[in-house]
Amino acid sequence: MGTRPQHTNAYKRLCAMLHTMREEAGLTQRGLAERLRRPHSFVYKVEHAERRIDPVEMIAWCKACESDPTVLVATLAPGIPIYGRSPRTRETRR
Image (cartoon, rainbow, N blue to C red; front, side, top):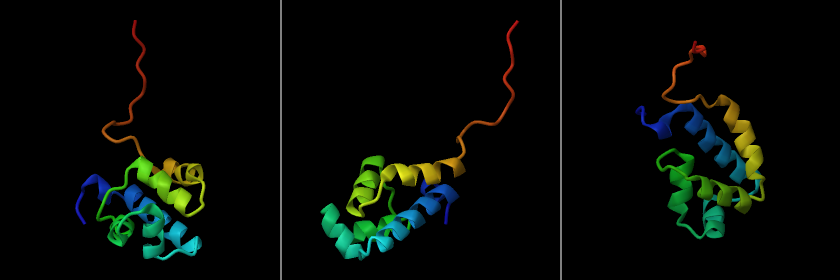
């Protein structure tokens, strides 16, 4: 896969977590798609990192799986770096 943002390790982890969430809810891709009122290809593409999922869609996914979205975010967040910034020490001005 390429280096586009949806292909980062953190995004792949999110997709895997959404997949696991769906399975633990006992839903097929089609079953979840029906709850979301989306085509089943939407679920497939998100789970396989072929399509980005926005925060609103992610929350709807969690609710459709009867899962707390804050748990998903809390689990995922520690492994996500701040992009575009290099770590440096804070300099004091004189």
